[in-house]
Image (cartoon, rainbow, N blue to C red; front, side, top):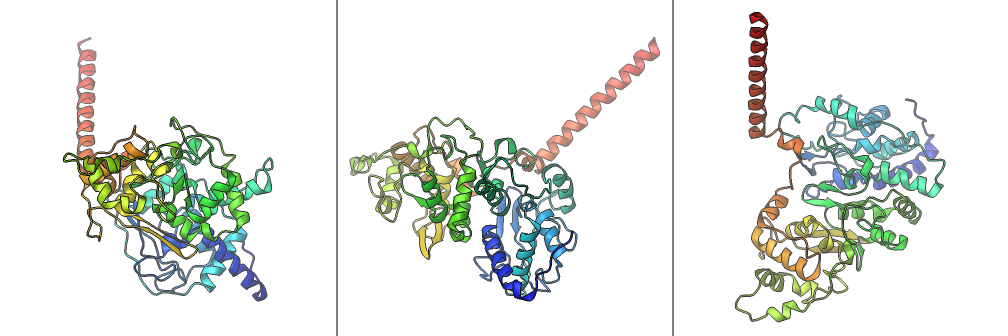
Length: 448
């Protein structure tokens, strides 16, 4: 692959472009540790169903980063998920989407990282996944099935605005990697693109223009949400989406936000079976006042009154700082993941230098008013019954599962010791049956 080399007087513009592209690609969200703090120095633990994957140092450090990378090395790592040493990266690095990035944009990104990011000589922790995922070469087989490596090609039947949105959504911003469901081998089910996908403890919801997605959102509402992370009467960003808005989306130009919106509003609608829009559920309730003083009060109300009502208000109506609990996509969803995870892990985002924070109430939280799994289940059920989707309920076991990272995909379950033992036993039985049948056939053949 050949790359153009910019003249010195062109470099500053290309470096500025590269910085913008790195922001759109959300590089800083993963490669900047909230503990170390040095931009792009890695060390952030990305939680995956396979275990914690540590983001690498991508500063131009010659000892610990990418300082010795040529532009070809850089392009190969970004697009193919193979580093300079020839090691396969895990797809927590969204190279399956970045493969579509153009040569010109790769060149600008390379100039930015090599010239405008400060080198930091800090080694990042090693990723240690369980067998067989610790064999990085196995990713070559996975890539054969799920990484096509194709560059973005504009659709001549679509407008320039929609094509730009396509490039942002499916290449740079890699929205598809979170919002598209995965199959048993953890490859994207692109025939159901953007219809929702599990992120472990959190859930990236359906963002297709269906009523079970964002079909009732106007273009202006979607733009506001992408820029701010809050849309009164519909949704608030938390978890990975809050990170995407804080580190990436809020910094994009209005034109690029409009392009993303235009693209998302014309993707095929996928109905996930929800009877109505997530933000259509609930209304204010006076149950908090009614239950005061009762000896056998709802245990969920007890938690709500003591830990939630002060901010979200007794009737759940919220205020200028804290969102209402009704007409809220977290409480109206057909699964409780995001409601429970917001309680467990809190909500943090910083938009326009205005921090938004809800404390974490989970058992492991560094907070005096911590709640156990049963209390979180109780308050979740109280909120769902009084303000959200009453068809959804939560158990303490579900809370525990989400607290520990969510349901393990089948691919992970099959590699657990008991599963391996079961598979081995089944194979032994099948082999024994095959041997017995073979012997019987040979005996019958001899007798005749």
